[in-house]
Structure formats: structure tokens, C-alpha cells
Image (cartoon, rainbow, N blue to C red; front, top):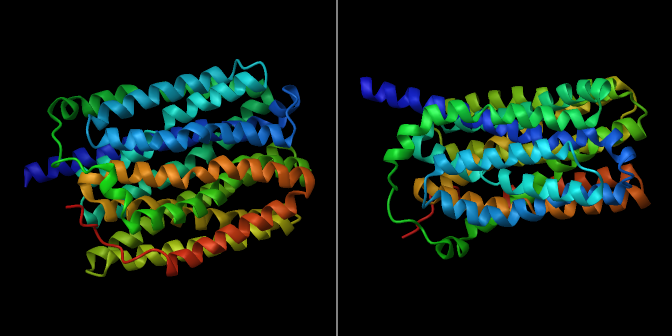
Length: 405
């Protein structure tokens, strides 16, 4: 009993630190959106150029996922996490010194390389240390990070932007991220020294032929398209199209992310309770994903036509609730399909494909905004979200661990 309790306490510590890592991941990744109103003016970036800068992060983030996921199933995932965080913290701080389009592009590329470790590494550790009846809350910790990162980043970044300028945002955020390494080394030092594989590593080729992996990757494209659209373009839309002051934009955007965090926690509790009661875990996760995509589409469309702060606040909260369901279950379902042996490689491949929406999405949005306006960009994003809801009904097969032998 004592060893079981110790193991549970250890897994709770690991999951908490992973949640903080994802939190910092999204603080640093989303900083450019907060800095955009002043950064784009100082660096003379038009919407198309800014779209390219947002896209640059994903030029390496998506394909390098393949390599990083493969590494997580074969080498020390705990040390790989530390190396990735160190690199992305340095890239974040370096963004505060960029002088123009080219150096900003390079900083975003380096940030993309560092941040590739977050989800393959976290999924590998959760699949290894967390049982099914606690999978919901473990992934809720990651989802809280996905939500609270932009929320805290928006709030803190907006305040820094208003008082110290956009460069100070990146310097402050990079230094804070470096501090995470101290507790991580303390919690994982022994694990890293005694780490043993779950069994023979699953070759990437054995996964590529599995339809569940492709179906999940397509679903991931749809959910990421919506999330990255809001993460990258919402601050500019609220300031430039709706005429809000930076402080008003900060409050409204933070409200949406706060709703996302609360929803992720609630959905995590609900899904674990459902599973402990003996009901099929797959059922609740599938329908939370389908419902989340549908609500996200409706909320995105609502943002485009909302006028006053009250209307904007309501639809942003709806978007946050939907995103909370999506961020929680996307990786939980991947862990169910892959199992502990292949979780790193599976999530690496799924993330590589899923994050292609981060490559083409900002470019497409930049072109649409420049030539057709924000309303059309929001309408396109809503269509993608609704298509994702339909895909979860007809495209994703029965959710159970795939036979990899």
C-alpha cells in the first residue's frame, strides 16, 4: 500500500510539472500575438508578413515532432524534456532582441524546435505512469496549461506591453521558463538514471499503416486550425477591427482562456468519474470531441459578428469551453490508441500532421484578412471546426489500443 501511494504521489508530481511545462510552452508561443499590435508597427510587418512569421514556428515544429516522438520511445524522455525546455526558453528571450523580419523568423524557428518535446514527451510519461481511471485529470493538467498559458501570457504580456513595450515580454517570459528546470531535475533525476523501456520499441513504419493514427491526425488538424487562429489573430482583431484598447483586449482574451481552463478541469473530472463507474471511456471522449468542435465553430462565427464587449465576452467564453474539451481529449484518445510502448512515436506523428494547420493556417488567414477582411477569415475557420465535428462521428474508428504486434 505504501509503495502504491508513493508511486501515485510521484506521478502526481510529474503530471503537475508537465502541466507547468505546457503552461510555459503556451505562454512563450503566444507571446507574439500579444506583442503584435506594437511589434508589427515597429518592424513594419503587414498581415501577410506577420502570417509568415506565425507560420515559421510550425515549419520545424510539425516535422521535427516525428523525430522527437521516436526519440521519446527510445531514450530518456525526462532528459529530452529538459533539453527542449532549455532551447525554447533561450529562443523566447532572444526574440526580445530581433531587429527585423529575418531575425524574428529565425527566433520563431528555434522556438518551434525546442517546443516539439512538450506533447510527445508528456504523453509518453502519462502513458507510462498514469492508469486509465486517472487519465482524464492527467490530461486535464496539460489542458489547463494550454488554457492558462495564453491566459496568463495575455494578462501579463498585455500589462508589460502597455508599460515596458513588446521586447520586455519576451525577455521576461524566457527567464521565467528557465526556472522550471530546477524542480524538473529534482523530480526526475532518479527516474532518468533507472529508466527502462516498456518493451521492444515500436517501429514508426508499424504505426504509419494504422488508420486510427491517420484519423486522429486529421481530427488534430481541424482542432488546431481553430485554436491557432484564435491564439495568433484574436488580439489583432480586437484591437484593429473592433477598436478596443490594449487593456480591453487583454481582459476579454484572458476571459476566454479562463473559461477554457475551468472547462478542461471540469471535463477531466467528468471523464474520470465516467470511467471509474465502469462506463466505456471511449464513448465520452468521442462525443466531447464532436461536441467541442461544433461549439467551437459556432463560437468563432459569433466572435465575427459580436459588437459590444458583453457579446464578445460571451462568445469568447463559449470558444474557451469548446477548446477545453478538445485540448483534453485529443491527447487522451491518442494515449488510448497507442498504449505505453508507442505513445511517444504516435503523438509525435499525430502532432506532426496535426500541426500542419499551424503552417498553412496563418498564411491563409493573412491572405484572407488582407484581401477579404476578418469576417471571411472567421467564417472559414468556423467551417473547418464544424467539419472536424463531423469527422469525429464518421472518420475516427472504435477507440481502443491498437495491436502493434
